[in-house]
Image 1 (cartoon, rainbow, N blue to C red):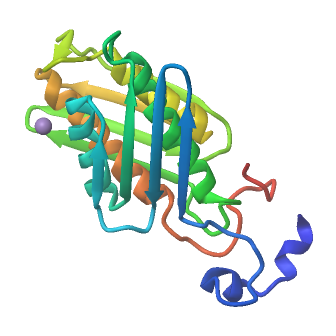
Image 2 (cartoon, rainbow, N blue to C red):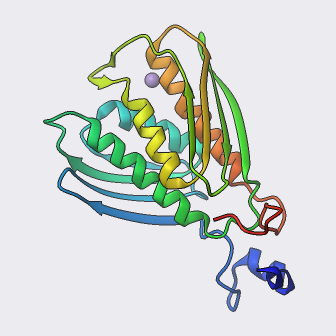
Length: 217
Ligand SMILES: [Mn+2]
């Protein structure tokens, strides 16, 4: 990969005609169908915060709407699944597809900042998200969410969603609710913090692949 530095950096960044296939594509679409769920998802990391969300888990629609707005991503999700069993499979698989789309959208990650972090308050709650788009999946969630459900949404699925997202997105995601009382606020603050941290991590900062190894897969 060392000779990549010989190429015209401006061409890579501009993505103009004749530019080599390198650097982030910024957008990706994922389709995934299993016996449990059917998910079609598209993500644009250089969007304007537009969300089009069609799937039968209202609280997750609320959270992904916030995610799009606070990350200024465009996000489309059309999905269905065995929610008559429970929301688990669909929530997990939407997280998985979001992770896949992120990974594809970032390509070789040339020029991105790579790290992002954000504290986000939501009234009495404070949440923190720290991201490293390292190419290696890692997930930590420290949160004591008191309610078992928010609306009809089982709060234990917050962990499943973010774990799938980090695993398939191949990045390190460290989430914490530092304090708070209201479960809805806690989860909302986690999604907003994650979006803002991700927005920072995918921001442009130079022309290099941000790794001493020269590669971030
Ligand atoms: Mn809310």
